[in-house]
Length: 211
Image (tube, rainbow, N blue to C red):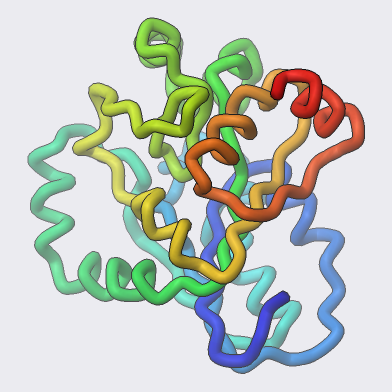
């Protein structure tokens, strides 16, 4: 589905990393791979980092890539605001507006007991998400089961693509599996943030049973 002159956006995570590790390019692409979310700031294994995945995917297709030097979540909204005013951020923002194909992982508060999710967001924030009836997230943008964006205490500290932009792509492929991610996947589908899904048969059946 990737064509010449595409701007291909990637998020981060274990499922997306596993997918890229299995990729074999059938042709070279004259496009560019870009991160659509900041880095996890040392809270995840480097193999799951967005820059790692962007660089790997670009190598597979022998095309260009851009790497991001900022975390996805800043310590406070004042710092995030300053960064958004920088020319560096504005260049990334322009690229995000040009994304034609995106591949994203999908998170869910139901994974709160899992090491990756809990290590990244922490117990207190997970309790906030439960209180807000959050179903899932893409690029640390949170939504409910109906796909409606849910503002959180960190919303103004997050640097990533806006979910509305994912509706403008030719393809936004969600890559996610497990019973715990069913609510997150359903919310992403209901919000039209993804138009393609890569998952397992078990997860697909659970999604169909939930509709």
